[in-house]
Length: 268
Image (cartoon, rainbow, N blue to C red; front, side):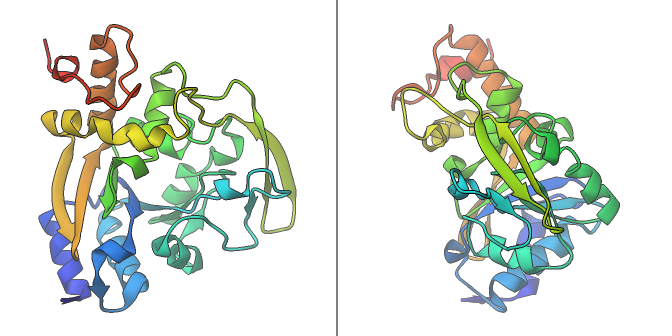
Protein backbone atom coordinates (compact mmCIF):
# COMPACT_ATOMS: atom_id res chain seq x y z
CA UNK A 1 0.00 0.00 0.00
CA UNK A 2 1.14 3.54 -0.76
CA UNK A 3 0.33 5.89 2.12
CA UNK A 4 -0.61 9.52 1.45
CA UNK A 5 -0.22 12.47 3.80
CA UNK A 6 -3.95 12.27 4.53
CA UNK A 7 -3.52 8.62 5.55
CA UNK A 8 -0.74 9.61 7.96
CA UNK A 9 -2.88 12.41 9.41
CA UNK A 10 -5.72 9.94 10.04
CA UNK A 11 -3.37 7.53 11.81
CA UNK A 12 -1.86 10.29 13.98
CA UNK A 13 -5.37 11.41 14.94
CA UNK A 14 -6.52 7.85 15.68
CA UNK A 15 -3.47 7.40 17.92
CA UNK A 16 -4.31 10.70 19.67
CA UNK A 17 -0.80 12.07 19.18
CA UNK A 18 -0.81 15.39 21.09
CA UNK A 19 -0.81 18.70 19.25
CA UNK A 20 -0.08 20.94 22.24
CA UNK A 21 2.78 19.14 23.98
CA UNK A 22 6.36 18.03 23.37
CA UNK A 23 6.64 14.91 21.22
CA UNK A 24 10.01 13.24 20.62
CA UNK A 25 10.12 10.78 17.72
CA UNK A 26 12.44 7.79 17.33
CA UNK A 27 11.77 6.18 13.98
CA UNK A 28 12.49 3.60 11.31
CA UNK A 29 11.35 4.81 7.90
CA UNK A 30 11.82 1.32 6.50
CA UNK A 31 9.18 0.01 8.92
CA UNK A 32 6.68 2.63 7.74
CA UNK A 33 6.65 1.21 4.23
CA UNK A 34 5.82 3.12 1.06
CA UNK A 35 4.77 6.73 1.64
CA UNK A 36 3.93 9.25 -1.05
CA UNK A 37 6.71 11.82 -0.88
CA UNK A 38 9.04 9.69 1.25
CA UNK A 39 10.71 10.92 4.42
CA UNK A 40 10.03 14.57 3.53
CA UNK A 41 6.29 13.98 3.47
CA UNK A 42 6.32 11.96 6.68
CA UNK A 43 8.25 14.73 8.45
CA UNK A 44 5.89 17.38 7.11
CA UNK A 45 2.88 15.40 8.34
CA UNK A 46 4.42 15.03 11.80
CA UNK A 47 5.35 18.73 11.98
CA UNK A 48 1.89 19.85 10.82
CA UNK A 49 0.07 17.60 13.27
CA UNK A 50 2.20 17.97 16.40
CA UNK A 51 2.64 21.77 16.18
CA UNK A 52 -0.98 22.57 15.20
CA UNK A 53 -1.95 23.73 18.70
CA UNK A 54 1.41 24.88 20.04
CA UNK A 55 3.23 21.58 20.39
CA UNK A 56 6.92 20.96 19.70
CA UNK A 57 8.18 18.10 17.54
CA UNK A 58 11.67 16.81 18.37
CA UNK A 59 13.70 14.69 15.96
CA UNK A 60 16.94 13.20 17.43
CA UNK A 61 20.08 13.98 15.38
CA UNK A 62 22.70 12.33 17.60
CA UNK A 63 26.43 12.59 16.92
CA UNK A 64 27.87 10.31 19.60
CA UNK A 65 29.66 8.45 16.77
CA UNK A 66 32.06 11.44 16.68
CA UNK A 67 33.32 10.89 20.23
CA UNK A 68 37.11 10.94 20.15
CA UNK A 69 37.22 13.15 17.05
CA UNK A 70 38.24 16.83 17.01
CA UNK A 71 34.62 17.97 16.68
CA UNK A 72 31.73 16.08 18.27
CA UNK A 73 28.89 18.24 16.94
CA UNK A 74 29.50 20.39 13.86
CA UNK A 75 26.60 22.80 13.33
CA UNK A 76 28.06 23.88 9.99
CA UNK A 77 27.31 20.39 8.66
CA UNK A 78 24.29 18.10 8.69
CA UNK A 79 26.08 15.13 10.24
CA UNK A 80 24.27 12.61 12.42
CA UNK A 81 24.19 8.87 13.18
CA UNK A 82 20.42 8.41 13.11
CA UNK A 83 17.97 7.49 10.33
CA UNK A 84 16.28 9.00 7.30
CA UNK A 85 13.95 11.26 9.32
CA UNK A 86 16.98 12.93 10.92
CA UNK A 87 18.49 13.56 7.49
CA UNK A 88 15.45 15.44 6.20
CA UNK A 89 14.91 17.21 9.53
CA UNK A 90 18.41 18.70 9.37
CA UNK A 91 17.68 20.11 5.91
CA UNK A 92 14.30 21.59 6.85
CA UNK A 93 14.54 25.33 7.51
CA UNK A 94 11.62 25.22 9.94
CA UNK A 95 13.67 23.32 12.54
CA UNK A 96 16.20 24.54 15.10
CA UNK A 97 19.06 22.22 16.13
CA UNK A 98 20.16 22.03 19.75
CA UNK A 99 23.79 22.25 20.91
CA UNK A 100 23.93 18.98 22.81
CA UNK A 101 27.37 17.60 21.82
CA UNK A 102 26.29 13.96 21.55
CA UNK A 103 22.46 13.94 21.59
CA UNK A 104 21.29 16.94 19.61
CA UNK A 105 17.72 17.39 18.38
CA UNK A 106 16.01 19.32 15.63
CA UNK A 107 12.97 21.01 17.15
CA UNK A 108 9.93 22.18 15.16
CA UNK A 109 7.18 24.50 16.30
CA UNK A 110 6.84 28.08 17.50
CA UNK A 111 10.33 29.56 17.17
CA UNK A 112 10.37 31.29 20.55
CA UNK A 113 9.16 28.13 22.31
CA UNK A 114 11.66 25.97 20.44
CA UNK A 115 14.55 28.28 21.29
CA UNK A 116 13.56 28.30 24.96
CA UNK A 117 13.24 24.51 24.95
CA UNK A 118 16.82 24.00 23.71
CA UNK A 119 18.32 26.93 25.63
CA UNK A 120 20.04 24.80 28.30
CA UNK A 121 21.74 22.40 25.88
CA UNK A 122 25.05 24.32 25.62
CA UNK A 123 25.42 23.93 29.40
CA UNK A 124 24.41 20.30 30.00
CA UNK A 125 26.94 18.20 31.91
CA UNK A 126 25.59 14.85 30.71
CA UNK A 127 24.10 13.66 27.41
CA UNK A 128 20.52 13.46 28.71
CA UNK A 129 20.64 15.89 31.63
CA UNK A 130 17.45 16.45 33.62
CA UNK A 131 17.72 20.20 33.03
CA UNK A 132 18.11 19.65 29.27
CA UNK A 133 15.68 18.67 26.54
CA UNK A 134 15.41 15.02 27.55
CA UNK A 135 14.66 15.81 31.18
CA UNK A 136 12.09 18.40 30.11
CA UNK A 137 10.05 15.61 28.56
CA UNK A 138 9.19 14.56 32.11
CA UNK A 139 8.90 17.97 33.71
CA UNK A 140 6.66 19.28 30.90
CA UNK A 141 4.51 16.17 30.51
CA UNK A 142 5.78 15.28 27.06
CA UNK A 143 5.59 12.11 24.98
CA UNK A 144 7.90 9.77 23.14
CA UNK A 145 6.68 8.38 19.82
CA UNK A 146 8.41 5.10 18.97
CA UNK A 147 7.69 4.77 15.27
CA UNK A 148 8.63 1.31 14.08
CA UNK A 149 11.21 0.88 16.85
CA UNK A 150 11.14 -0.51 20.41
CA UNK A 151 12.05 0.76 23.88
CA UNK A 152 15.75 0.06 23.28
CA UNK A 153 15.70 3.20 21.10
CA UNK A 154 14.00 5.30 23.77
CA UNK A 155 16.80 7.72 24.71
CA UNK A 156 14.50 9.44 27.20
CA UNK A 157 14.90 6.48 29.57
CA UNK A 158 18.52 7.51 30.10
CA UNK A 159 17.18 10.84 31.36
CA UNK A 160 14.87 8.96 33.73
CA UNK A 161 17.92 7.18 35.16
CA UNK A 162 19.53 10.58 35.73
CA UNK A 163 16.41 12.12 37.27
CA UNK A 164 16.11 9.16 39.66
CA UNK A 165 19.87 9.00 40.23
CA UNK A 166 19.94 5.26 39.50
CA UNK A 167 23.27 3.70 40.53
CA UNK A 168 25.64 2.19 37.97
CA UNK A 169 24.33 4.17 35.00
CA UNK A 170 26.96 6.92 34.44
CA UNK A 171 30.70 6.89 33.87
CA UNK A 172 32.60 8.32 36.83
CA UNK A 173 34.99 10.09 34.44
CA UNK A 174 33.96 12.99 32.20
CA UNK A 175 34.63 12.77 28.45
CA UNK A 176 35.97 15.65 26.31
CA UNK A 177 33.52 16.90 23.66
CA UNK A 178 33.31 19.90 21.37
CA UNK A 179 30.69 21.88 19.45
CA UNK A 180 31.45 23.88 16.33
CA UNK A 181 28.87 26.62 15.99
CA UNK A 182 27.63 28.04 12.69
CA UNK A 183 29.94 31.05 13.04
CA UNK A 184 32.94 28.71 13.27
CA UNK A 185 33.46 29.14 17.01
CA UNK A 186 34.48 25.89 18.72
CA UNK A 187 33.30 25.26 22.27
CA UNK A 188 35.18 22.57 24.22
CA UNK A 189 33.91 20.99 27.43
CA UNK A 190 33.50 17.68 29.24
CA UNK A 191 30.32 15.70 29.84
CA UNK A 192 29.31 12.50 31.58
CA UNK A 193 28.35 9.52 29.40
CA UNK A 194 26.33 6.39 30.07
CA UNK A 195 28.20 3.45 31.54
CA UNK A 196 27.14 0.23 33.22
CA UNK A 197 29.70 -2.31 34.35
CA UNK A 198 27.63 -5.41 33.57
CA UNK A 199 26.59 -4.80 29.96
CA UNK A 200 28.00 -2.91 27.00
CA UNK A 201 24.75 -1.13 26.08
CA UNK A 202 22.19 -0.74 28.87
CA UNK A 203 19.60 0.64 26.44
CA UNK A 204 19.25 -2.82 24.89
CA UNK A 205 17.62 -3.89 28.16
CA UNK A 206 15.07 -1.07 28.22
CA UNK A 207 12.68 -3.49 26.49
CA UNK A 208 12.41 -5.25 29.86
CA UNK A 209 10.24 -2.33 31.03
CA UNK A 210 7.67 -2.94 28.31
CA UNK A 211 5.31 -5.16 30.33
CA UNK A 212 5.40 -2.80 33.32
CA UNK A 213 4.77 0.21 31.08
CA UNK A 214 1.73 -1.48 29.60
CA UNK A 215 0.47 -2.54 33.03
CA UNK A 216 0.52 1.12 34.09
CA UNK A 217 -0.92 2.32 30.77
CA UNK A 218 2.15 4.34 29.82
CA UNK A 219 1.79 3.22 26.20
CA UNK A 220 -0.86 3.68 23.53
CA UNK A 221 -0.42 1.38 20.51
CA UNK A 222 -1.20 2.15 16.89
CA UNK A 223 0.25 2.35 13.40
CA UNK A 224 1.83 4.94 11.14
CA UNK A 225 1.97 3.52 7.66
CA UNK A 226 2.82 -0.15 8.19
CA UNK A 227 4.93 0.58 11.27
CA UNK A 228 3.71 -0.39 14.75
CA UNK A 229 3.85 2.67 16.96
CA UNK A 230 4.06 3.20 20.71
CA UNK A 231 2.95 6.60 22.01
CA UNK A 232 4.63 6.75 25.43
CA UNK A 233 3.74 9.11 28.26
CA UNK A 234 7.04 10.42 29.67
CA UNK A 235 5.68 11.16 33.14
CA UNK A 236 4.06 7.74 33.54
CA UNK A 237 7.21 5.94 32.36
CA UNK A 238 9.31 7.77 34.96
CA UNK A 239 6.77 7.01 37.69
CA UNK A 240 6.67 3.32 36.72
CA UNK A 241 10.46 2.96 36.83
CA UNK A 242 10.48 4.81 40.15
CA UNK A 243 7.97 2.30 41.53
CA UNK A 244 10.03 -0.64 40.27
CA UNK A 245 13.15 0.72 41.95
CA UNK A 246 11.24 1.28 45.19
CA UNK A 247 9.83 -2.25 45.27
CA UNK A 248 12.86 -4.16 43.97
CA UNK A 249 14.61 -4.23 47.34
CA UNK A 250 17.72 -2.58 45.93
CA UNK A 251 18.08 -4.95 42.98
CA UNK A 252 18.80 -3.42 39.59
CA UNK A 253 15.81 -4.22 37.31
CA UNK A 254 18.08 -4.22 34.25
CA UNK A 255 20.66 -6.61 35.66
CA UNK A 256 20.56 -9.89 33.74
CA UNK A 257 18.20 -11.03 31.00
CA UNK A 258 15.30 -12.24 33.18
CA UNK A 259 11.98 -10.38 33.00
CA UNK A 260 11.21 -7.82 35.70
CA UNK A 261 9.16 -9.58 38.44
CA UNK A 262 5.52 -8.56 38.46
CA UNK A 263 5.64 -7.80 42.18
CA UNK A 264 8.09 -5.00 41.45
CA UNK A 265 5.64 -3.02 39.36
CA UNK A 266 2.27 -4.00 40.82
CA UNK A 267 1.02 -1.44 43.34
CA UNK A 268 0.98 -2.90 46.85
